[in-house]
Length: 479
Image 1 (cartoon, rainbow, N blue to C red):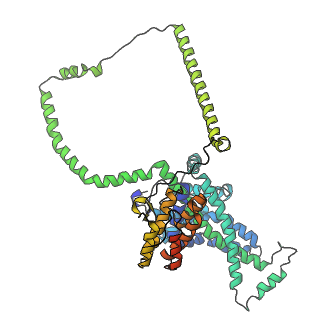
Image 2 (image 1 turned 120 degrees about the horizontal axis):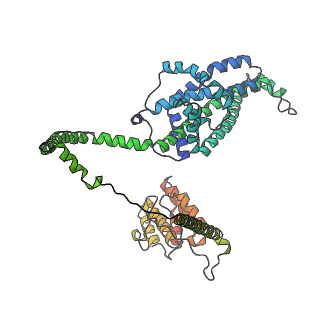
Image 3 (image 1 turned 60 degrees about the horizontal axis):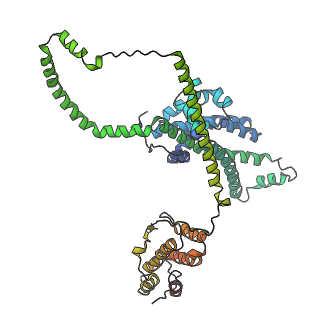
């Protein structure tokens, strides 16, 4: 495994971010993954379809049971592609018998209902572990992302069922007129009093549609599990740190070579000088000089300990432990009581005369790419905006009015507007702030601003004049 050849960004991710990584890997090679999935499932589909064509529900159950074989082929593609290798078709054809034969009883019987299949399958296929080593490794892998893999497994099955019914409805709508006689006859035979007694033609069509939907859901489920597997190994084994050191080593390789060359050139001279200095002294003198250094002096300390002292020391240690335990218990109890008081503070804390304190305004300086600090705005915002509008500078006029309004609702309305908020986010925050932020005026201004900025539809002059005249923060009138 050569991490320097990896084709995705290796870094520690959250659980759902790693699921998104796996889905992106599947989208990159979607058609190849889908082809490999059906290549593994082709033979059993043909055999089971020939034997169970009159029992579509049993056929569909057998198809679902054999699904790990297709998942193994998709995992082969994703794992090789992640490290910059495209598996050749010859290797894929050689792998086909193995996806059915390898650990058949465990994968298709014993662990078939495991909800951790998307994560445990990479451990089994890519690391080749068995027995106790496999169990320990699986325990490490499912410890991180446990909830994400179970939810992904459940969502994939539900999505396959609903998507299969959607494909069935689409097929029913696209049947050419005049060739739908078998369908019409099947629908007439379907008795409403026996809704589960579905005609055979409808059952066959539903089974085929669900199979197609199941294949689409399973390749993405396999990708999500592979993303969780890669993320867990990144957290455990520090793949990102290893890649960082390798990149650092590549950058410092030439410098290291020069340093090693200098050391190799200078070391013989230094060693030669030391050897020349020691050559004139006998060996025993050198040895005695070394042994006389303080590091080789042996220190011995003898102390008598009374038995009663040992027992008293034990009692003192036990008393210290009890004292520490009591202090810890008291601190934990006080912390728990304080936490309960803090959680219920809204129900009992009522300071006389305090009333409702306004929320602390956010310190946003730029919103939607526009400067909203009071220093960047003129004193008479509506007057300047109306003059700009009369000069034909419509975008500047409405933009000045909009960012001036945002500045005032932050300053006077105490609205927490953040720099990453959109127009819709700003409007929701102003509405939640109440009448102090003048939500009706802000809603009208926002609608005019969006129509001009994004749709290129300027409002009427009378509407802009009304916005400047009704400016709620300072009593001004358009000049």
